[in-house]
Amino acid sequence: MSSTASGKNGTWRNWGGNVVTRPAREVTPASVDELAEALRRAAEDGMKVKAVGTGHSFTSIAATDGVLIRPQLLTGIRKIDRDDMTVTVEAGTPLKRLNLALAREGLSLTNMGDIMEQTVSGATSTGTHGTGRESASIAAQLKGLELVTADGSVLVCSEKENPEVFAAARIGLGALGVVTALTFAVEPVFLLTAREEPMSFDKVLAEFDELWAENEHFEFYWFPHTGSTNTKRNNRSAGPAEPVSQVAGWIEDELLSNGVFQVAQWVGRAAPATIPAIARLSSKALSARTYTDIPYKVYTSPRRVRFVEMEYAVPREAVTETLRELRTMIDGSGLRISFPIEVRTAPADDITLSTASGRDSAYIAVHMVKGTPYQGYFTAAERIFTAYEGRPHWGKVHTRDAEYFAGVYPRFEEFTALRDRLDPDRLFQNDYLRRVLGT
Image (cartoon, rainbow, N blue to C red; front, side):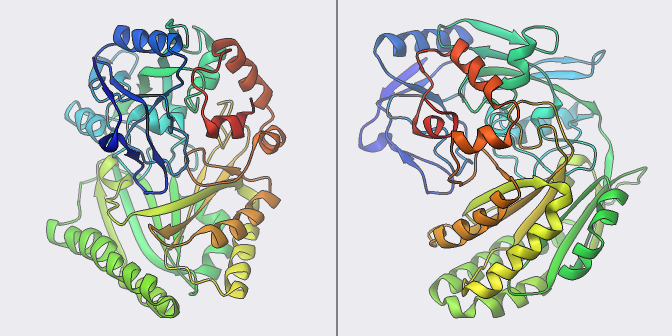
């Protein structure tokens, strides 16, 4: 186990650049026993503890001025169980590494988000999700987990063992302990056919229910200041595989979606008046395409343009009305929005603080490029989202507090009572958890 004091070079920043923290001590445990010892030592020294993954959260959920736990030595697959069709993986394993390893074994997760850089524990603990009519978030695919609690105890949790902890710790916000291993349900690798095509904003809203019902995975991006969207429909396929060619993939995913898009963001930031014209050009840059490949190559995309993001889950039946209000707000505000707005869905699940807990949900994500003032836009959008009892993504910018969450999460008190039991002295407390969960 390595432990380093933070000085000038000990500053930690998140991926979006909007969170900076200076922990007093950093610890990189190489085993569960070393982690438990680090927690006991921190408690003896009167220091708070937070674990951090790759920093893809835009909130300060992992920030601390105490002990920062880095899990990069807790990586790799512990076990593949082909009888139960599960894989147990160390908490610090990046999703990209897990996806590659599963593919080599002829296996796959059922659903995933569009970014693979996160650690498995960071992704699940904050509620990372993709889009799906029937398949839910990454955390909803968990069959078990291992958690080290504030007193150094190791809890093995599943629907049969410590079920009340399992119900909450799948999306635990780092408030219940440090996750050290996760067991995912997997299935034999399959093929997905992706169909991407432009569609008008009004047509998407008018046909949203049909588009959702007819496709296993449906999502779209709307370009503010335009009436245009780019839609994506992913459905299982019998094959054959027809992946995007290397040249076409580079042009679409690297040159246009990242390179040209980055330049457009720079231009828009320097000259905001040009943003509507840039948006109209951007909305026409990507043409329709269809391809078939294994899941992670369809679900995920490279994201090299850095941004700050707010995302809310609203009841699925309210998504079109929410989007119409969002468009009216943008059109009448004088705001210049250079980033497309992303819309996805998820079915209801049974995780205590999942944004889809107990209700079918639609996710609306708003973004601003890194370094651009975002507060005015996000505040106006949040006002609309909260009018529909929206639930913000735990790892993305929002201003909600414990009082609000107690009103939109029926099982909120169940989570806080469990936290009182597992971490009565608040070893894992920080300013973010104090705000969203209370003291």
